[in-house]
Image (cartoon, rainbow, N blue to C red; front, side):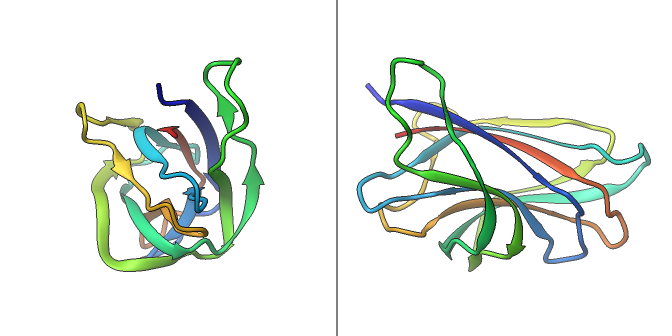
Length: 151
């Protein structure tokens, strides 16, 4: 049975396209994380901003603040995949690799749940993974993201 983990992260200041990364899940050579649940929202002063939220694959993890993944079953061991938030150096995203690309109103919270066998899978290659980024021409508030994944 797969082990399930969660991590949360924040991009402290959204930017214009191509955006900035709020949260990543990074593979190890021994595991292929399968992202199955994503929640995102914006915590800035409420306004009617239309933002773009994307999940994309990357081949180099960039520089992020480490986030400790939490086992959803407390009997499970620590996650093999790692997680990070608020990138100061962006991951190297694979061109045209948008796994999810959604237009959102800043006032709305959005949740994506994979259909059975529809999980977003990262390769079992060190420093590869999936990242979330959000962008808007002028909005600079925070983007909050939660990932749940299987290993």
